[in-house]
Length: 497
Image 1 (cartoon, one colour):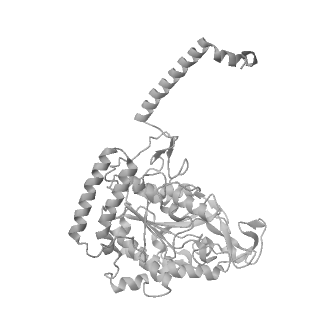
Image 2 (cartoon, one colour):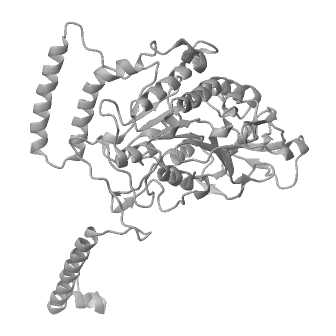
Image 3 (cartoon, rainbow, N blue to C red):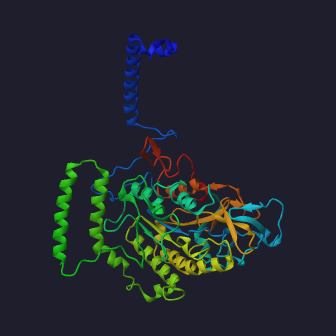
C-alpha cells in the first residue's frame, strides 16, 4: 500500500521509533494489569463492595458439609413448586372488590393480555374463610393447607419479569429467564454441601406426570460443577440401575467398587485440579452408595397406616395417591439430612390446558379443582407431619409458583390469563414469622402495590434464612462473579422471625 494514501496517524504507526514506543507502553500496561489483577485476587470485590465467598470444595468429596456464611436456624430446605401459575385471587389473596365488581369491566382493565382479549372482573371461584388463630382468609379450594395458616408467612406482593411459563420457571428457580444458569438447589449445595454422604445433596422429586415445562433446568447445575445438579426421581420412578444383577454377590460388588476406586484415583492423579473429572468420579461413587441407601428410602411399606391415611396414599385419583407418596418420600429424604428437596406438583402441559399443571386459561373452576385435589391433602399432611416431628425447627419450607393470574376472565369467560405483576408465595418453618402476611396487591389483585417484592428479593431471603449472603455467594464464570440474584435483590427483613 502506498504510504501517501494513509492518514498521518497510520503513517506514524509504520514509523519504527513510534512502533517501539507504543510497544513499550503496551507491555508496561500489560504488566501493570497483571500486578493489579494479582492484588485483586487476594481480596476481590464485587460491585457491592463486598468480597465474594466461594466455598472451599474438595474435588474428591464435593458433598461434604460446609459452614454457612453466618449462623442460621434453617439447615435444610423443602421447595414445593407448582408449575402453571396458581391463581392467587382464588387461593390466598382475598380481594372483596372482586365480589363488588363481579361481572363488570371497570376502567383501567387492559383490552388484551397474554393470550388475547380480556373479559369482566370475576369473583373468586371458591369462597374464602378465616383460617387458624391468625384469621387468615384462604379459599375453600385448599382447606387442608388453609388449616395450617398459623405456620405460614405469605408474601402477597411478588412480581416477576415474564408472563411465559418456561421463562417464568427459569426465573423463579435460577434467577434468570434464559437457560444455562444454576438452579437454587445447586447454589445451596455448592455453598453448604450435605449432611448425608449416602444420598444426593439435592433431590428433585418430579410430578408423577413428568417434568415441568423448563425440564431439568429447574434443578440443573448450569455452570457450577456437575456434582451440584439435582438428582431427579420420585416414589413411582426410583433411580435407574441400582439393583444388583442376579448371580452377582455383595462381595463381588464391593470388590469391584474398590477396584474402580483405585483406578479412578490413579486417573485423577494424572489430572489434578480437574473439577469436572472429580465430579464425575464422585457422582459414580455416590451412585454406588445409593445402591444401599435408596432402596430403603424408597420403601414406604414401613410407614404406619396412619401416615398413609393422613397423606392420602390410598384415596382419590391415582395422581393424588402418587403425589402423596412423593410427599412421604420428601419427608424421609429431609429426615436423612438431604440438603435440598424440590417437590413438584405439576408437569409440562402436554395433555392440554390445565390438565397436567395449574395453567387454567379455560374452565378454571374444573382445572384448578383437579390440581388442588392432588396437591392439598398430601402437602398439608407433609407440613403437619414435619411440624409434629420437630423438623420445622431446622427446615425451611418454600411454596412457590412462577406468577399469578388475572382478576378478570379471558374472552372465553371461563379462565384467567397470566399475571406477572402480582402473585403469592409463602414460607414456613425455620427462621420465618408465623401467621404473618407481607406486602399487598392492589384492590383487584392485578399489581403489587404495598412493599412490591421481586423474585430476586424472594431468593435473597431464602438464601439468608439458610445462612447465606446472596451478595457474596458467587462463582467466577466467563469473567463475571455470578450470583443467584444477579446484581439485584434485598432480604425481606420483615418476614424474619
